[in-house]
Structure formats: structure tokens, C-alpha cells
Amino acid sequence: MAHVTVGKAARHEETIEGSRFLAYVWPAADPEEAAALLAAVRTEHPDATHHCWAYKFGDSQRFSDDGEPGGTAGRPMLEVILKRELDMLAAVVVRYYGGKKLGAGGLVRAYSGAVSKALDQAGVREVVDMVTVTVTAGFALVDVVLRTVDELVTQHPDARKGEPDFGAEGLELELTLPVFQLDAAKARLTEVTNGGVRVLRPDE
Image 1 (cartoon, rainbow, N blue to C red):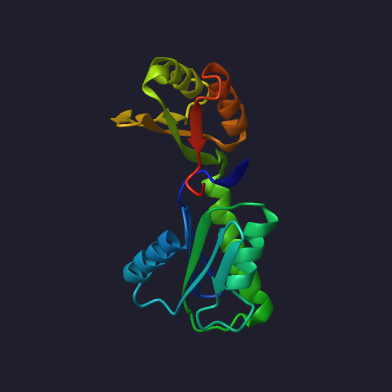
Image 2: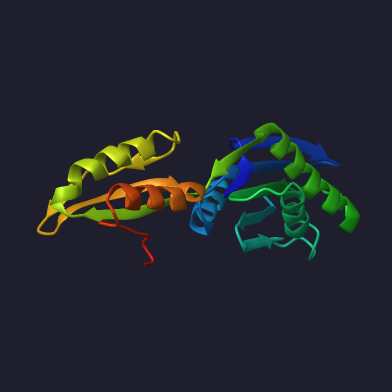
């Protein structure tokens, strides 16, 4: 499995009918990181009229109009993200009111357009979903397990293994792999140890 997010953080600024709009987009890991990014923007622009935002993290998606008329800012920003099928990102648009009202349609175009242009600058990248499992085996199987784990780690650039830990029962180590490789990795470890290894996800 994988998801597509922004390639990098980006910022776009434009002035519409006297109002200044500054759009920010970032890749982010979770809503807590999105909140921290929003807080940083609020600190950078304390005198702005509005700090509207939207984010998407899997099934979790939220937005805020931050004082703009309902449905004219946060929702259009989120719609841009959804239309582009992006995930794991946050967007904020700061507005400094310029004295001329834009109307509902004008606000929708301004906020969605600012986010679109920031996303154009950010580009996109595909991120492979990873999973970390715990591998345990008896002392007699240490060599074959470590050798096989090393082979598995070379199959993907983001795969990695933790430091082996030796306790009373034998070997224990953490192994991080792409989700799509997990079943094959379990099968391979089971094969080389004749079923003498355990591969457990955190929720097992």
C-alpha cells in the first residue's frame, strides 16, 4: 500500500481585490503535527484577519473557515486536496483583509485557488506504507534468522532492522518493512526456520 502526498512544503502568495492571501502546504504525519504547523503560522502572522485550514490523514479530514462565511474557505481548501487524491498533509491560508468584500463565490475561488497554486509548487511524491514487526527465535536459529533478515532489508530502500536483543528465550529484534512485503517476509522466515520463528505486529 502507498499514499500520495506533497513532495515538499510550499508557500504561495497573491493579492485579490486588496486582500492578501498566503497559502502554505506541508506533508505531515498526523493531526497533532498539523496543529503545530497551524500554530506556527498564527505566530508568524498574528495580525492576519483569518487563518483558515484543512487537513487529511487517512479517514481523518477536517477544516476551518476561521471566521469567514461558512463553506467559503476551509471546505473549498479540503475539496482541492480530495480532488487531487492527496493524503497525509495540511494546508493553511492566511488572509489580510483589504477592505473590499469578495462575496461567497469570490472567497471560494480565492481560498481554493491559493491552495491549488501552493500544491502546484509543492509537487507530489508517493510514500510506501511501512510496518514494524517483532521477530523472535531461539538461540539455535539466530544465524539463519539474522542472515534472512539482512536479505529482506536489502529488498526495499526504506526497510531497516533494529539492534538484535538476546534474552533468556533467544533472539528478539524489530524489523520494518513495506506493508506489501510483510506476508512474503513472514513466509520466508517461516520457511528457513521450519516454523521456529515468530513475527508479530504491534497489535498482535
